[in-house]
Image (cartoon, rainbow, N blue to C red; front, side, top):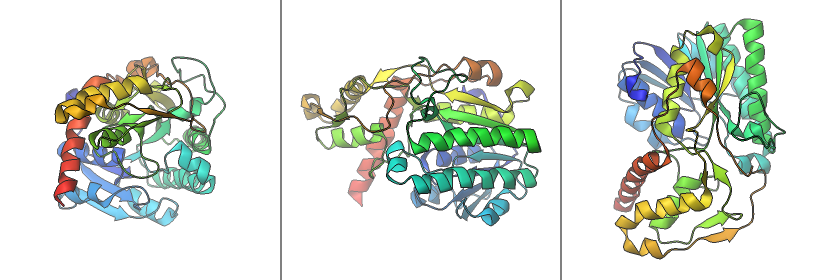
Length: 335
């Protein structure tokens, strides 16, 4: 569990520090007595995710693009560990613009990994994705069995893992990849064309709108609360298990929830805020291109080699996430 971890007095670089996952990592690291360098260009991250930490004496924020090798070198200077979260996310976004996804997710990854190598960084933990399982029918997903990628985004993450393995072999960069499974929680953007499903559903339900579910609602995901993701990132930095290095790990809870089930859980949790929510019914639309039907993580490898012990299942995580979203939307109404 995250509450059991002791990690302090380190100097850590978090790329994508203005993003959903990156900003949560920054917050945890600062709260636990570490020096943090944050890097972001605000392409998808938000300044409101950075502003609360700017006055912290142990925080340094650099505005810059990971496609710029010079800024990557600057960010890595004097850093002990790197948590590389920066990327252009979203399967639909990558289908619409595969060029930018490739430039940032592959070119930027190589820049960061080589800058970290040159700076003598001791550990490089990076965000991969469950999307690399592609068309593999195997459930639950096991790290050694991936399929044909179904989107440019999935290809970029697959290539990231190949480069990480190569950097370990060539330069002895201590790398650990984390295949995130549908992460959700505080600070996840509820707006925009490429917002994730949970914040979209929450926003629409609170507004009394009919939610559109892609496909028949039987697409299933291993929804993973942000605190579980923070836990495994920190465990990746801490581990002294040599067998754990140069590996990719599933980061999920190990549970499967369909979109229909997710919708009903959210309705039940949000109805106390407005009784009319109980009467809402969803609309069903077409399937999304590039989407896999089912996703479920086998997390045995992460348990065994990293000591990963996710504390938050979907119900517990959603309750905490909804508390944050309700307060967030209320704050917007006051502005």
